[in-house]
Image (cartoon, rainbow, N blue to C red; front, side, top):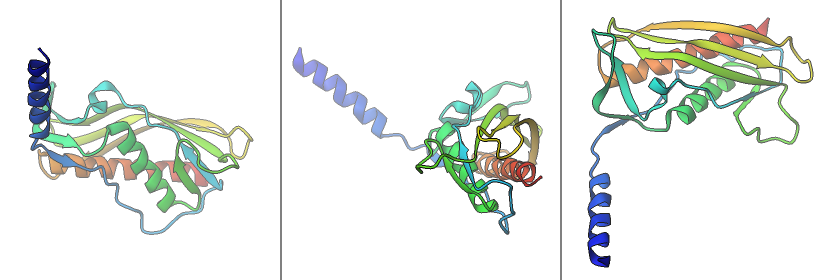
Length: 186
């Protein structure tokens, strides 16, 4: 019985190791220059994604409106972690603030906490990538006025394939970072 269990485990591990799926990073393009914002530091909380965007498989909407996985493609990182890291990196490069994803790594707490809740993150059948939802800027010490802002970002995709979806996702994250920086500069 022990040998049969070991054989089954070995077969399962071999099947998992044979995954030849292409993996794509979320790589948000960096802004040209850093803009001044009214805070010194920003903690980016883990981005909240809907189930359709939180899966490791890359999905695309078909003509019927259904979301289907693009065959043999995966995100290179777990989506919440990848999106959060890309947003924090874009904010750090594009603003005068120090930015890090949670947990905040410094002893002095961040001036503001950024909470992003994505409602839709879809590569549409019409060739448009949609990133929409709401973000909150929380300022426990009153550094800036706390606020809730909605976002609805639409990026035309160059093609209907995984590389184009990954590129549009990165562009969407960069556009969201730009919107947040604009809000924090006011």
